[in-house]
Length: 562
Image (cartoon, rainbow, N blue to C red; front, side, top):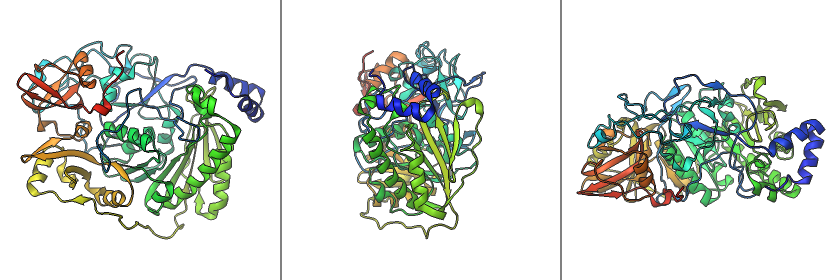
């Protein structure tokens, strides 16, 4: 890896002093630990003892190019191109507070069989095959699928500021873990998970959240879990290629309460005073990712730092328009630079005047090593890798005063997108979800979608006013009166597994399925099957006699061999 940029080192030594500056630079040349965040709608919480996290460092994925995205969230190394076509694609089900949403039961049946492995959280994610895989053939309720535990393996440590976060003792090959592909967890840098702590003083159930710089989706999926089945997350990413990766990660998360848009911030900001929370994970110079990303080192320059700060200020001002009076604003970057952090906040505070107010106090433990501060009404949090167990990360929080602004404004629809479904189609669609009475079913072209009733009108307004590429739960298309399920439906945590047989695959067959290769027919019932590994849904396959059609999306398939 390239050495740290000389001018960066000089600035760090000036800002932090010789001792602290050298310690930070040494940490940036060290080895980052690995952290993940469990999906509360899909992963059972650990039952055994888990050590509290201590020490230094974490992991993440750096920016793909300077000033092109903060990159503080990480996803594993699989092909991330789009699954499906543009215009409103996706799925999900939610969890809030300390437990999954009561209206979205765990997709793992209560009659569980424990396997001998802890999925990715052990050195060998495939230490044992699913205990009762053979008996799963033709089980229309899916009740006999195995439920491999998602609790971390021995030696894992809890991320202390994140209710669902864990440090792993080793970095597994995430690409070859079916639980990763099923959306059971997200590979996310620990510092980025701190937004969970920032929102701890609130009950965000039912909130509308705007994640304005959302790719690749770590914070988006966290917000989707926090707001619950009646909440809504609008995840915007201006880069279409990155937005497709974001959409894939949202689908796998399976909460059904996210809209992915590809718009300029000013276009999203036209939905004035719409959101209870606006989060700006601003594109930055990526200094906090120097430990992980050699490209970030190569592309860094003082000029780029200044250019990013200008862009960050513009995005923040646009985002402010979308926040409701009394709403919460979170600003974050993965850089150490005061130019991109405190100075951006100071300029923003000067422009907003009396509309800014203090947010609820965020409690932290000194043992975490997080450097807390203030910039006017903003409470700030700095993660230095030589002190806190995470990559370089900066976050700040404030509120819009309750009396600020004017009124909510919804732009006029640019086009009509949605059509109605028939009563017979509603009945057929309803048998595929656990709470059909809580869903609204709509048609876009020939494909049907499901949306939580509480936010269906909002989704329609957003989709018809912005460039949306994913939303809600993509259900599928009708063929001779029956639903042909879309691949995304398998990931939905609210899928009713009584709708079709479940085929439980062992480790080798699961990887063959994820590579879109042929799998043996013995474990499959005749017709359409839900494909599972360790009780976790991966997709669909159709058995026709002695042959199985692998319906896993080509755009998501594993390309690596080992």
